[in-house]
Length: 419
Image (cartoon, rainbow, N blue to C red; front, side):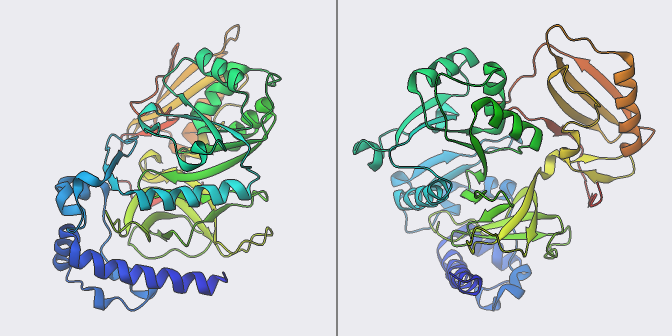
C-alpha cells in the first residue's frame, strides 16, 4: 500500500472504532461524555487531540465489564496480563480472532526478516505466557517451538537450547544478554540464523555482544501486551517499521500536540483491530522518534527512528531536565571490561544510586569512580548525590525482566532533546 492508502485505512478503522466504543463500552461512553466529545466531532487526524487519551491507571480503576464491549461474553475471552514492569499490571481481554490477527502481524515481520516454516524456534519468555495448546502450525509439524522459562537458571536454559538446536531464538533483551554472558564464547553446538529481541530497550553495545556470541543477525522488535507487535527492524536496520495497518501510533509532546518528524515524543497508541477491549489513544509511557524517511527495503510502513525506553525510566537532572536512559550505555565509565552488570536507580531529584556487579578477577580503581562521578555531575548537576553499590547480584523484577534504569522521581516535565 502507498502511504496515503495506509492513512485512509487507518482513518476508516479509527472512525469506526470511536463509534463502536462510544455505543458499546461503558468506559468510553463515560470518558467521552466527561470530555464533551462525541465521535461525530472527529473529522480527520487533525482532530486527534479532541479525542481524550487514556492511561493504564484509568483502565485499572474500572470493572472489566465496563472496559469490554457489552455484547461480549466475558467467560469466552482470553485473559492476559501486562508484565507490570512499572508495578502496574493490567488485564487485557481478547478473543481468538484478535490473537490470530496478532500472530499474523508477528509472522509477517519474522518472515520478512528471513524466518522459514521449517525453522526451529526457541522462545525465552515468562512461563505465564506459555501457550496452553498447540497452534495450527505446530499441529501440522511446522515452525517447531520450544518455550524456555526466564526463571530457569542460565545453565538450564543453555542446556535446553543445546538440546533443541534452534535456528531462531526470540526473547527479552535482558534475557538474551544474560544468556550471552553465560555462554561467553561463540556458540558452536548449534547454529542460529536469526535472533529476535523484544520487550525492552536494547542498546547498541548489548546488540553487538549478543549477535557476536550467537553468531547471528539480531532484529529488535517493539512489542507490548496491550498491542502485540508495534514496530520492527528489517534487514536494513534503518529504524523500526510501524505496523500502521494494525495500530495508529502517535508521538506527542507534554501538551498532547503531535511532534515534528525527528523529534522525541511520548507514544500514544490505538489498536485498530481489537474491538473486544478497545484501547483508544492509550499512553504507553514510552518515548520514540517519528521519521518521514522511506526505507530502502521498499516497504511502505512508516519508520520510527528509535525507541528511547519507558518514560518512567527517564532520569531527572537537579534542574528538572529529563535524560534518556540510553546515556548509561556505557556512560559514565571509560572502560567497562570490569563490569558484569549494572543498574541505575534515581531515588530522588538529587540522589542517584549505581549498582554494579564486578566481574570475577577484576578490580575497580578509585580513578575509574572519580572519572565516572565527574561525568555524572557534569550532566546531572554538581549537587547530585551519588552512591556506588557493589553487589553480588542484581535481581530481576517480578516480570522476570532486568531493568537497567529505574526512576522514582515524579513530576517529570521536559525531555532533554540535546542529551
